[in-house]
Image (tube, rainbow, N blue to C red; front, top):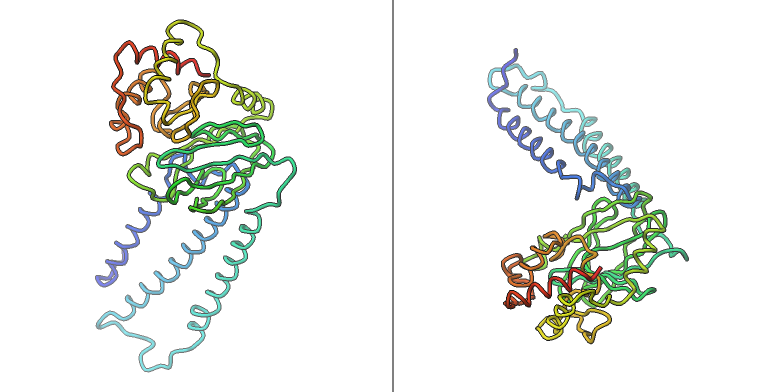
Length: 338
């Protein structure tokens, strides 16, 4: 077995480190991996990434092999067949001009094609959804049906959805890797991204632009439903909150209306009108709380109400130290808001 020359060992070590790093970066989980696309735009982005990866890998292999060959041939005491000979220009022309030009042309063409399809023309059947980024949660509006929810974007399968994105404070970035590419939410302007997939399911999204202390916990879900289920959900979300079904829930509504909750939250069908925090009209229909970081269960909801700073330090929701009986009544009321 040929021993690796001493001078080339650092390059082998560097190559091993880069290979391990590449594997680690591509081993993202299925919930937030751009390499498992289900949307057309995400598929084009993933295809462009793989093209760049394999072209880059090929270039790296060629350059590394050439470097190792040069180091091997020029060790002290080893005969150098090029010594005293004129260096030919052909390798320089091909390696430094022709091949890089071909790679750049291919990548430019693929990138332009992906960009051309990223913003399809407006379609009459497209669903319009407005998404507003806040520190650190997402407001979701369906203007055609006067529906307001939070941290869950429900869309129909099989037809295009136009997401109109803006921010209420700082720069955020909307990214659901399986369905679409990243796009920033810039103060003072509105951006647009399209989602179109035939595969129903729940796809995880994330703010991809550092926006403050809880940036990493500013998550959301895109729920892709078949058309009948989406229309059923949309109709239910457009209704006002149901009347309390029992005495405990009725007391909980009074607790809500008399506590500090009314200064930030709205429950349609009551006298609340604030939009500082998420709309709670159908809170119980959501799967998660606090922008996707805890499940929507009675225990987690109680902890979130009493001490949100323990769950999400820096969140703009104050602690609410309610008497135990009032807290249980409030939880009963909020749990009834399907």
